[in-house]
Amino acid sequence: MRRMTVIALVLLVAGCGQAERPYTPQQGPSGTASATAPATGGSARPSADAPGVETVEVGGGKLRVDIDWPARRDPLMRVITDWYLTSRKVMVSGSDRYLKDLDLELQAVRQAYDGVRRYTEEDRRVKGVARLYGLRVTKVLDKGAQIDTCVDESKARVVSASSGEAVSPQPSIMRAPYLQRALAHRGDDGVWRIREFLYDKEGCAR
Image 1 (cartoon, rainbow, N blue to C red):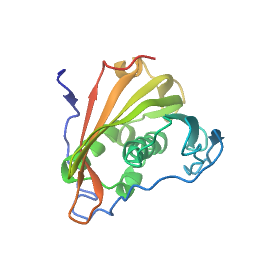
Image 2: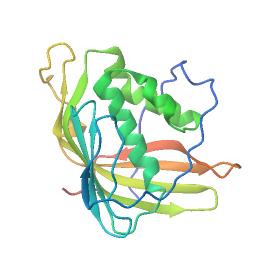
Image 3: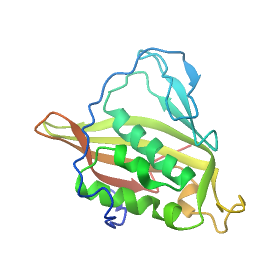
Image 4: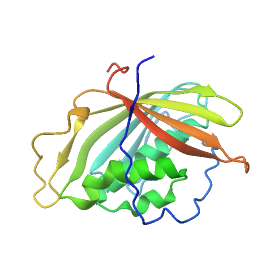
């Protein structure tokens, strides 16, 4: 099995000593086969029984995320899509306060803050179009689950927050689709929380 690359861990003091709010996956309500979500980050979901594209606008439309849902959707898939959308809110706004709304165990908290640090501490933002596809719950055990998605950010760009111009060089990981993986743990309260993030530059075709 290919060795997965683990995102570097950096602990940010803010929020780490606070109790995380639990995340309870639920099946989404029925909607249209393809819908555009409000700019606030809310979402309209396609039918629960058919594949479809959910479009979410982040930061007033600065970033558009197209989520290609499979016909058979496990509610656990929302664990990884919610993580992606929330982390991109940070990258669009430059504020990491959104991460406090996620339900993460300590190691994932460290990874999450480190993953967006360039966008909160440096003159960096992201805009354009991103796509999530190939969503799947790869493994489910009694208290563990592995959720995967392919991420295509080839139509997104990292820009200067002050000028709006694309920075050079662009992050290499945005040049081609990559595999994003979340390892989740179910606590004694029955709530699933992300324990660790992994990614691989291979494993996803366009």
